[in-house]
Image 1 (cartoon, rainbow, N blue to C red):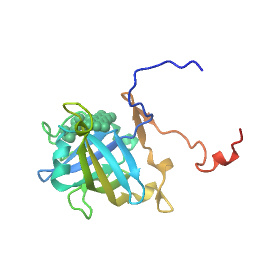
Image 2 (image 1 turned 90 degrees about the vertical axis):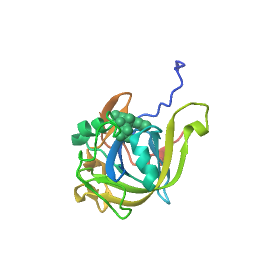
Image 3 (image 1 turned 120 degrees about the horizontal axis):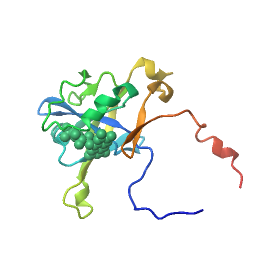
Length: 192
Ligand SMILES: Cc1cc2nc3c(=O)[nH]c(=O)nc-3n(C[C@H](O)[C@H](O)[C@H](O)COP(=O)(O)O)c2cc1C
């Protein structure tokens, strides 16, 4: 081992890419986030970290709802666009064909292979935890409904092999590769 000490940063590779939808002042807005994670499976809870000045945050707080839309390779350009421009300056409400679910206020993207409709159960700002002037705002949402296109399901379950989804790391998008091995399985063979 020849370990170099490198600057401590929140390196976690690869990172997801998620398109977050919220209604702001009655109109849909979308932003691209990589700081997205699962915090509980039952009930299904997802955390998103959206910088506190973002336009999307206004809508999430207004309605206590948001959507998480899974990207596919063919949407890379438009999803990147939603991560470059802000709804504060540019109206992103017409960028996608959308639909609403039971919560009525979380706009979801029709062409996205998988959509999660979330209800906010907790909100806090990172600046409440550490000494910074401005930072991310954390929303924990409970997934109340999930919607998937038939083409992306195998036996009713989302199938990543069919998704053509992609990931993000250090200013680039990366394709998702092939299956490596079955989880909770290959470890059974391990012997020291
Ligand atoms: C690949 C990518 C990942 C991003 N990840 C985050 C993130 O995790 N958190 C965040 O606050 N902003 C992130 N952004 C930036 C926002 O998407 C961007 O500031 C957006 O314009 C905010 O839109 P809004 O002001 O309409 O809400 C990311 C952008 C890109 C392109």
